[in-house]
Length: 102
Image (cartoon, rainbow, N blue to C red; front, side, top):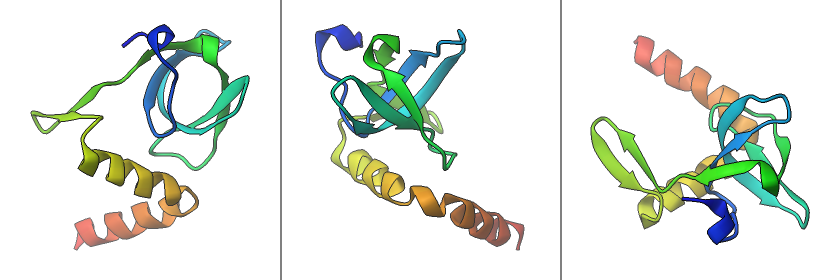
């Protein structure tokens, strides 16, 4: 979905082009007047992004051959919890890896 048709919202996944020319797909973490902060689901650090760098907003995700709408309330709850756990993701991944190895 083209972001020019509506405002980018906290928790949404956006496709952007960095000033370096790289294309990135990350989640909107916090919004300010002139820019927003985005954070990848698999990282702890954040990045400031200008709104004009947004190319598109993700509307659905395909996981294990199943389509998940980004408007789904369960998905939104999951995304909110994951954003709240940003500073603990490294420990969560370690625990997850440990459990999978057993």
